[in-house]
Image 1 (tube, helix red, strand yellow):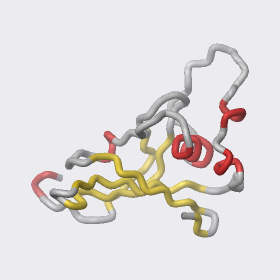
Image 2 (cartoon, helix red, strand yellow):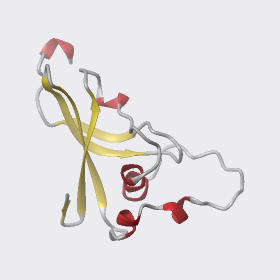
Image 3 (cartoon, helix red, strand yellow):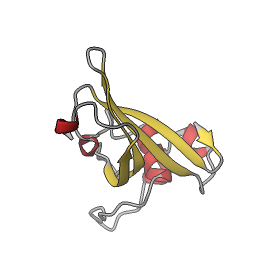
Length: 120
């Protein structure tokens, strides 16, 4: 969902109660990965540079290429299962290194209080 200069991306990251810092995408490439790499924060870690031409821009998902470059991405990550319902919901900003599936959170905070205060 795009609202003003922000895009909100919901991501189901787990079906059990685990911290959002364990969030990862199902695939390292595709619409979600391209959206995070292009509109998320710049990675805190530098990628290993082999002094080769950067090929990332050539393979950007066509829908992501339509978005304005100044768009800021806000990720809404949640853990949910049919048995336990919604266990965690957090929002924030995360980056994604090229070829990786694990989100690197720059900032995140809960949207809901923990279901089990002792588990937090």
